[in-house]
Image (cartoon, rainbow, N blue to C red):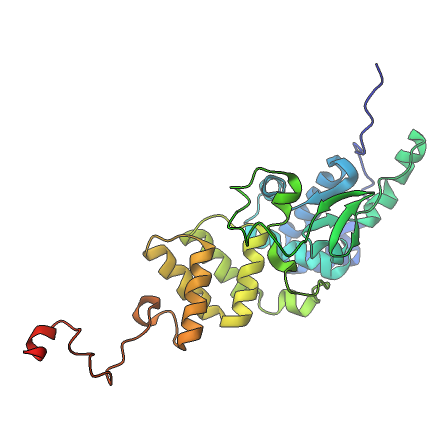
Length: 283
């Protein structure tokens, strides 16, 4: 029987001066030993992953990486964002939530040379889609599962259908996120991420991107208020939160006022007729 060949390796070089190099110096300065541990656990996971890439659009793969690293979801996201901004992982592929480290591939190339095989190909971006060879592993067609009302958990059609949920590609130009955008509001994002997890549920890469965009469009205070209203009214979903924000922006008032509803206009002639003492006023 022919042995199945896999594009994985069981080891990678760990250089003695690794902690003195630029990447680890920066992430350790920002995240302490968590940064050091996360980087090498990420490299371990890349080595054991088929093709040496991690598609974080697949929730189980992202959750396994976070569990393996023993970090909170928001800290994991901030760490990967920083690694992308430093060029430690491919920044363009990370905008599609795919982790690829070219230096790791270069360091394990000797393994594939000994196997007399070609190196695993790098995922390539073509027309806002990600391909491995001729296989489309990420389809950014604007007609997404989100627009059809299907979430990652609800859709079981295919791997491509699941990955299409990341709606950051809809009506936007895909460009690498600059370091300043990743890190300038990290404390605000951490607060928002923490409150979301406490009030609503687990974060995913898709949800975190939506919350980041919402903070830019509506302000962090509005987003936190909408999350709490969603929780208090037992409508715990991202869609409900976004609905509150859109409605409040349209009506020009913060979500905290009247629990996210439009405030009553006391200049309206019918205001008092609809109130508690409406019958008395009308009599």
